Length: 129
Length: 109
Image: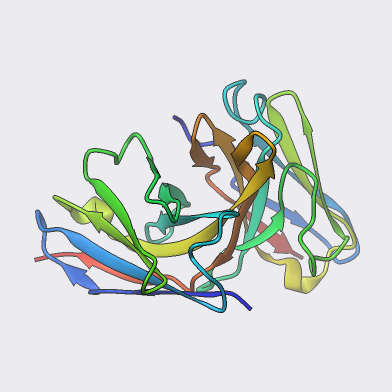
């Protein structure tokens, strides 16, 4: 069964760049049926979508984070990655990666249908000097 | 894009039914049939419970159901069980992006 696992530093200094990788196992990241997403959750707070990427490299970002976010994919390693620049304490959160389902039609793929499933276990990233 | 609005908390006794609302706008909940619901137990990752407003993934109990009317989506849990106690989040697709609700804490009395 498909599994996702986040990895990366648990502590990042203010103004530096947060970097995380999500490794996909039990399935191919190159499937045409899915996007791959990052979602975060500050301690004690709700979920926030960060962005999503297709195996081809096509990306969508949360407008509120777009200027600081880069998501990339490495199909040879079955991984996708998140970089968030100029971090502050407000970026302290549990970061999750998840698979985003697509609807395949004769006209192409449609995002939105299917939601995020499954999710990785999450990794806590603390921004502090 | 603003977060979807959910009640902070709801409660119910075992065996009862509860409904959690999720209010958005015509640009998100009202504009797409792409509302999903997630269950999150403390210290765990969210789990997809409902997608596309009312569809259940394989393995999710049929006690969970979803619906939508206008700009408001709803999650109903029937026959409440102790294991249903968790946080629940709604999410809606909107113009190439995703927006989540603030979350609702369900307490089983």
